[in-house]
Image (cartoon, rainbow, N blue to C red):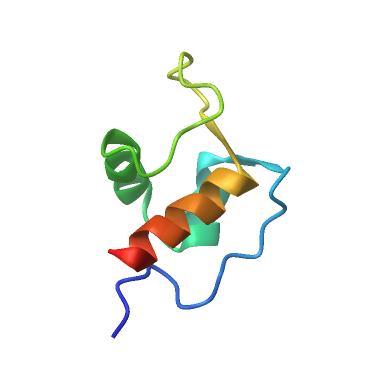
Length: 71
């Protein structure tokens, strides 16, 4: 059994910008899990200096998915 949050690669535009809610939906995780991944350095927001309304790129979502699947 895979450790991936979702079995198939998330369908996102690598150049796209996603809110926390949409990022969680694409990865099929809770916002608390997303925060944990961010604290562990598995995913980085595109606006890290702004603690409110974090945004993630599609590429960072794909990179996070790849990192988790390799664990």
